Length: 331
Ligand SMILES: Cc1cc2nc3c(=O)[nH]c(=O)nc-3n(C[C@H](O)[C@H](O)[C@H](O)COP(=O)(O)OP(=O)(O)OC[C@H]3O[C@@H](n4cnc5c(N)ncnc54)[C@H](O)[C@@H]3O)c2cc1C
Image 1 (cartoon, rainbow, N blue to C red):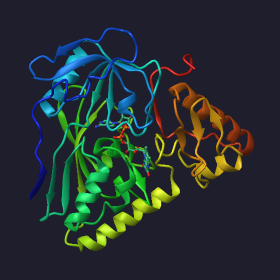
Image 2 (cartoon, rainbow, N blue to C red; image 1 turned 180 degrees about the vertical axis):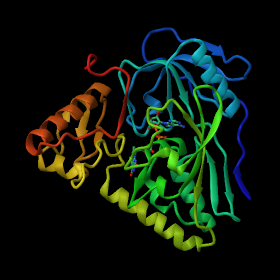
Image 3 (cartoon, rainbow, N blue to C red; image 1 turned 60 degrees about the horizontal axis):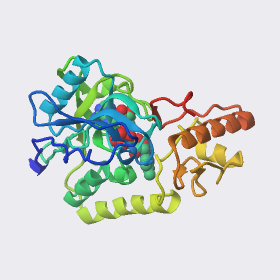
C-alpha cells in the first residue's frame, strides 16, 4: 500500500487561513474548539473560499484537520444551536453577499490518500484535490481519473455532486464513502446508498459530512500514456472553457436532450452582463466574475437567463451551482 500524504493533526487559526480582515466592520472573535487545538473564528470572509471570489462572511468558521476535530466542530455547532454548512473547495457555490449564519466547516484540510496496488482502490480523505489526485494516479500508471483533471473541487464535493466530465463521473468508480452523521457517528455508505444520478446524490441536503471515499481505479498501466490522456483532457477544457476568470464551471444542469449552454447561446445571451457578472463568450453555461461582481449580480444574471430561456424554449433551467445564504430579499 502506498501512502501519499500523512494527515496533519492540528488545526490552528493560521491553518484555517482565517486571518483575512472580516468582510464588514463587525468585530472578529476567535475561540478554541473545546477539547482540541482547533480555533473557530467569527466573521470570516468567504470570498476567498469560493471559486467565484464573492460572498459575505461566515458567522463562524472552522477548518478541521482530522476526524476528531471535525466531530468536535459538529458537536460544538449543535450545542450552540448553529446551522452547519460544509464547504469543500467552494468551486460549485454561490455564497450570498450577506454571508452565512451559523458555523461553516471547511473540509479542505482533511487530507490523506492511499493507493492500494493489490485491489486497485484509492482511499482518499474528503479534502484532497480532485485534479491533484488525477495527476498522482496518472504518474503511478493508474487509469480511471483522467477525466477529472479539470474539476477544481475536493473529493467530498465530487462525491456529493457526482462530479463528472468527458462522459465519466464519480459514480462510475465509486466503491464507498465514510460519512459523519449529525449524531456524531461515522458510517460507511455503498454505491446503492448514494442513489447517484446526473450530478446528484442522496447526500445533497442530507446533513451528513463526507470524510473519505474509496474509488476503484485500474493500476498497472503505462504512466506516459495515462499522463498523455490526462493532459489532453486538461488541454481540451482550457481551449473550450473560460478558466481565466472566476466562475463555478457550468451554472445550469443540462436539461436532456439539450445542453444548457446551447439554449443560453440560442437565446442571445452570450456576453450579457449584470454588474460584474457576465455570461462567458467562450461557453454560455459559464457565468464569470468579470471583475468586482457581487453575489447578487450573479444571482440576478441566473434569474435573467432562466427567464429568457423559459420564454424562448419553455424550459426552466435548473441551477447546478449551490446557492447558500439569503438571495431573494437581498438582491
Ligand atoms: C472552472 C470550473 C470547472 C468545473 N467543471 C466541472 C465539471 O466538468 N464537472 C463537474 O461535475 N463540476 C465541475 N465544476 C464544479 C465543481 O468543481 C464540482 O461540482 C465539484 O465537485 C465541487 O467540489 P467542491 O469541493 O468545490 O465542493 P463545494 O463547491 O465546496 O460544495 C458543493 C456542495 O457539496 C457539499 N460538500 C462539499 N464537501 C462536502 C463534504 N465533505 N461533505 C458533505 N458535503 C460536502 C457542499 O455543502 C455543497 O452543497 C467546475 C467548477 C469550476 C470552477
